[in-house]
Length: 127
Image (cartoon, rainbow, N blue to C red; front, side):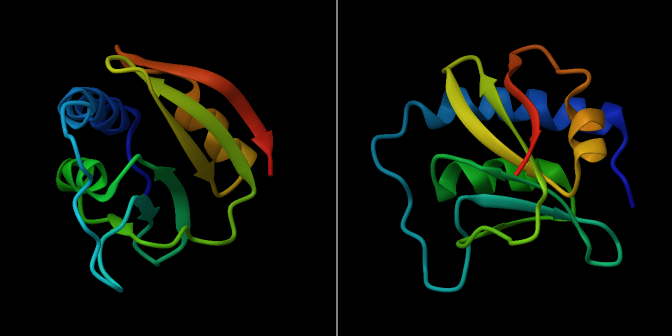
């Protein structure tokens, strides 16, 4: 299942709002072994990797995960197998978020239109 551009825009906008909240946190939440983490991994209905964002900490990731839907989960370790990458900046607070994508086509589609408060810093490139 592919997320629509409208849903991605909503998620990105929500992440911007949450980024402002995260910037006010003094300490990241602890991550229990085998649960949570700062890498938000999106999978389709068949379990195939779509994209991954690496947030500053577990608390930030979990807030975005709550809005992202059932195909996205925070995990402690980054998922392997992505072949494209891009970097986004969420304003405020100016947080850089690396994104990894299944392939260049997915990366370009996902970053072709950015929501308010999200800026593409480093364009899609092969990993």
